[in-house]
Amino acid sequence: MSNVKETVEAVQGIVEAVPVYDDMLQPAAKELSSGLLTVAKTINIALAPLSALVWSYEKVKDRFMPRLEEKLKNVPEENIVTPEPSIAVPVIEALRYTGHNNELCEMFSSLLASAMDRTTAPKAHPSFVEIIRQINSDEAKIINLLDKSNSMPIIKIRLYDKNSAENGFAEPLVSFSNLPYAANCSYPDLGQSYLENLERLGIINLSYSVYCTVPSAYIPIENHPIIDAWRKQSTKVDKRFEIIRGALTLTAFGRKFIETCVTFW
Image (cartoon, rainbow, N blue to C red; front, side, top):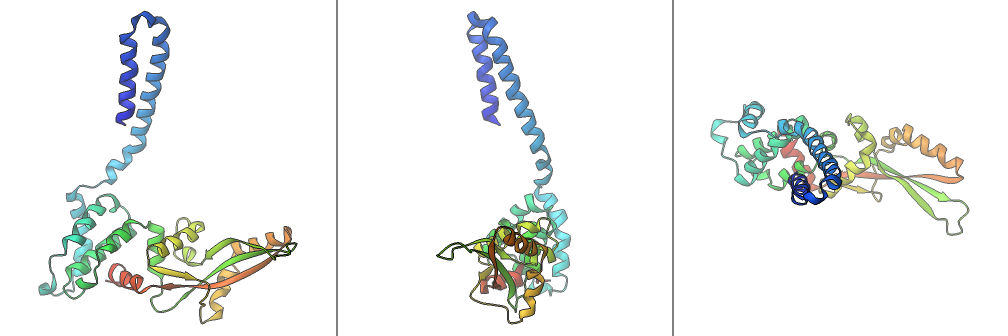
C-alpha cells in the first residue's frame, strides 16, 4: 500500500517540478495518479473485512474462554496447570485471525485444554500449533473422521494406452477417498490436495502397497459418480481403465495429534 502512495506522490511531484511541460504532462500524470488512487481504494475495500477478523486479545479471551471452561469442567482443580508458553502463546496469537473458524478454534481449544491438564500435558506438542495453522476448515473436518484404529480406503485411476508397445499409462486421479464427501467439506473436489497436505504434515500415510482388510470398504468409492465418469470417458478415448486400491493410515504422530487436538473432550 505504501508503494502505491509513494508512486502517486512521485507522479504529483513531477507535475509540480516541470511546469514548462504543464499542458502536456499534467493530463497524463493526473490520469495515472487517479488510476493509482483508484487501485489503492479498491485494495482498501477488499482488505477492509479482514480488520474485523483480526481479533484483539480481549476478544479472543471473551470468545475462547467458554470453550476452554467447557473442556476443563471435569478436570480436578489441582490438575489444572499453567500451559507451556511454547504452546499457549502461539495458540492465542493464531486465534486472533482464526477464531472465526469454528473447526480450527475447536482444535486450538482442545490443544490448550490438553496443555492445561497435568495428566495430558505431556502429549501436547508445540508442533501441533503449526499443524492447525497449516490446515483449513475442510481438512479439519476430514481429521475429525479419521479412524484411529483402522485403515481407510483410497483408490487411484490408471489409464493404459492400448496402442503403446510399452503399455504406457497415466494416472489422472490419485488419493481418491470418500472422506471429503462424508465430512461435508465445502470443496470436496479438492480432496486429493487435502489428503496430500495431511500426509505432508505427518498426520497420515497414503499407500498403494497396503489395503483395507475389508474388501467391501472399497465399493462406495469405486462406484462414486466421479469414478463412473472416468470409467465412461476411458472408453471414449480408447483407454484401458483400471482402479488401483490403497489405504490411508494414521501415523503414530497423527494418532497423538488426534488424541490431543480432536478427541480431548
